Length: 155
View 1 (cartoon, rainbow, N blue to C red):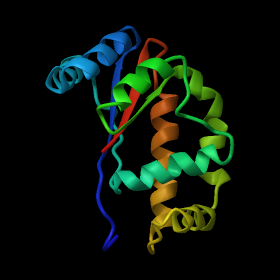
View 2: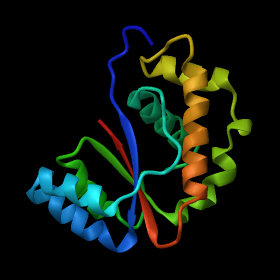
View 3: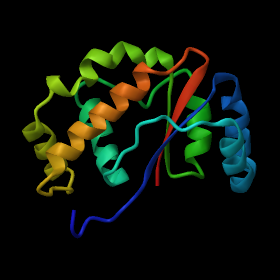
View 4: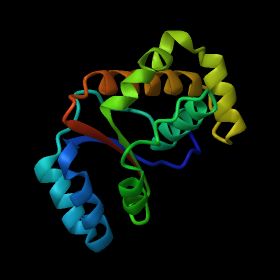
């Protein structure tokens, strides 16, 4: 990925009932927001080894296919967090309805690579990066407990 600016994609599971507090903290204190995440959040087992920009482009690729992971019952809280913390997506168990459409086997690396190229992030392994993003999203959403929310942060 030579020449590609880097961003980190991080995933943190938080208790569902903590989302309003996270939004409040995001508006008042970045350090308190991060401390709260560190204390109450837990990292899923899977990690993403590519640039966070790749995962961002996976999200736009999915949105183009009517799989919108950015909308949820927590749109207001997500907007509040996004005002100060780069791109943050709150993924809920309701997003499990997209699991079949997140299956990497239902997508071609060439389609993902073409999308990355269209978005200005073409590189030799972009198709692999996209498929890895689909695997990560599908796996972490599938394992999400009903009382948890997945906070995806790209920045």
